[in-house]
Amino acid sequence: MDYSKMKIPHHVGIIVDGNGRWAEEHGKKRSYGHKIGSENLEKISHYILKKTGIKVLSVYVFSTENFKRSKEEVDYLMDLFTKKFKRYAKRYQKENIKVIFSGRRNPLDEEVLKTMDEITEMTKNNTGGILNFCLNYGGHSEIVDATLKVFKDLRENKIIEDDVNEELFGHYLYQDLPPIDFLIRTSGEYRISNFMLWQSSYAEFYFPKTYFPDFNEEEFDKAILEYTTRDRRFGGIDYEKKNS
Ligand code: IPE
Ligand code: IPE
Ligand code: MG
Image (tube, rainbow, N blue to C red):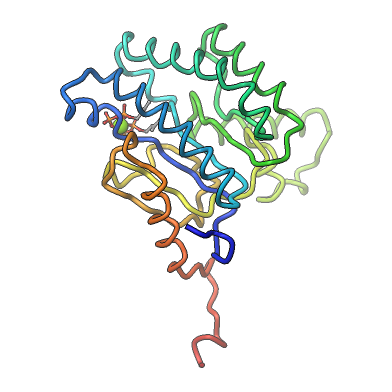
């Protein structure tokens, strides 16, 4: 699809969901769904950041609540993240993509933290798109952690109470990113499950039935076509348009 003349979102969020059900429907273990899902994530993030003009992509790959899953599944996912980040550091570097992470470090293990730090460091000066992995991420935790940082700066007199407003608070979040314009959750679930609560306040939502491993370029194009039909008002009214 030719994106050059389209009204495209600046920041897209994807809640990567349905890997387990996809695997079950194919008669495989959940882990196989995560493996194919992770391969799809590589393809679709490349397409989004390199072929469409979209500048920022946040992908929800592990929530703070996902630690409630079996040890076997959590270990598999952590190992998968470690392998992927190790393997793809060079690729993102070559593609000029800046990789960043949102989430709590605790209780992630050393191995995965090390690969996260390496890829962050290696790609930190890249300017051709931002890929934000939300890993051990929770929207509630993010707001609590930002609040604690604000308290600390107040205590240390780096800011005063009068400075604290929505704009300033936004800078204390895990990453200083623009708001989410378009939020996609695959697999037909209609909820945000603690994803970027602050940043999604005026996001447009899109809930395709497709499980994430099948969410390909064509599906993404369909999503963007839907986005172009949305009338974003941000609480205001376009009186001129209404009267014409
Ligand atoms: C999304 O797929 C990946 C993660 C949450 C890590 P799920 O594992 O949630 O797949 P379903 O929802 O059980 O199908
Ligand atoms: C949300 O998916 C978290 C990620 C996609 C990483 P879940 O599958 O964990 O969410 P629920 O439990 O269905 O709400
Ligand atoms: Mg799920």
